[in-house]
Length: 372
Image (cartoon, rainbow, N blue to C red):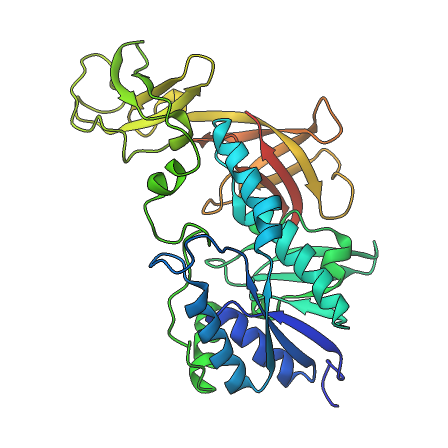
């Protein structure tokens, strides 16, 4: 068979979305023997309006039919609940704000799914992520690169992948702009060509987040205090709030004299601190209040793409997904799996539980979970 694939078997994770469908089509055009797998990762209330994998599977199967490949339905719900959702609840119960998509990639899509694909005799797996993999001939190590579309780059969510995982993974759409992916889908007649991108966490979907979390975490109300120490309201439980949060505080329009920073009496309120021992939620007025800004952070549970930490040097980092790379300096932490970052500019609402991900230009080096 002609093309770079040369008949190699590659298993593609088909989600029902356009990116993974175009991934499968591109690989088939390159001469790969392509098999599609649809991963079912959530079973609770799956027939609800918010997160129905049945609809996604129908879309994935319809796309596979147009592409001309087989598709298999695989249930990873047990693994997801044990490896991802349990950790998600532990983090929220501890007052932190986790990123389950990162853990899902490390534990399900590039572990359980990869293992299943290898049992099917696959030489590679592929997903519709906007990222790239490159083998550096000088170091003989695989590098994780940003996707070429800066608006869609998903390397942040993939930063915990290791050398073995990257060596067995292809990201075809990482070489394309999203507009090109949509155009290809329309040109080849994919039924999901105009399907909107998924924005919710799979087990939450578009439902109200607090309502969902309330099913699993007990409410423990406590005081809301401003930066003067005045109690100005009551929160429903620290687990239900995240640093920088502006909506849903129940204190909108409240006038408190002498607390504004860079705004008047009606300046918006933001969550600035969560004091677990006293069960107190601290809020401030004004987006640029000093309590919301920091130039340093400590991260734990570090994971490095190359298998070892980069040398202390001038790098760049993201402390949340939709953030521009921020220049920083890396230092080792007190423990082997910790590190510290110092930034040249103040960073806004650095949030424990989220990930600090480091970059050297277009290369994603890895990262860790923000501790403080």
